[in-house]
Image 1 (cartoon, rainbow, N blue to C red):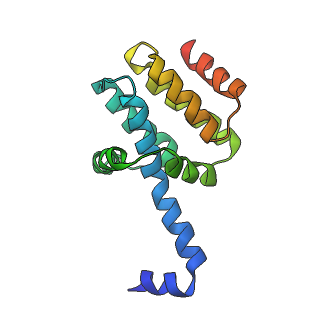
Image 2: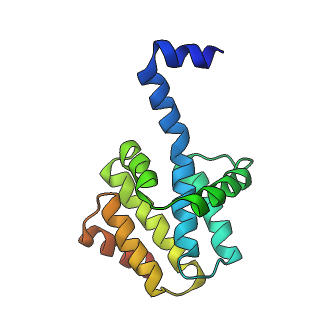
Amino acid sequence: MLKRLLQVFAPEEAEEEARQERIPLAAAVLLLEVAHSDGEFHPAEQALIGELLQKHFAVSADSVSGLLEFAEITRQNSTDLHQFTRDINWAFSQEEKERIIEAVWQLVYADGRLDRFEDALMRQLGSLIGLSHRQLIEAKLKVAHS
């Protein structure tokens, strides 16, 4: 009831709170999309997604599996990535987005190889979150050489 009243009397605060709650879901959907882009979903990728959500998006260890289940349903029902990258763009600075894209590159290389579909999706994702081609490649090389 109190939450509903806040939405009526303080819609901007309620909107910001709702957006903050959507950020981990958006991140999980994007990570799952990248993991599935090569047609294979490895157990190592699933474990790494959980670690990335905890490290970069403040998701508790207890919440990871439930979030991933919901994110997978959301991913399967979505038509594009824009709705998810919009929340990431709103919440993170350019430097934070660079660190996030490095984490996503870690996921891409979790299975030991870079598929052409993963590479294409990463270029699209980098563009959608406002990273230059140079920033995307620097993040890729940093992860590939570590």
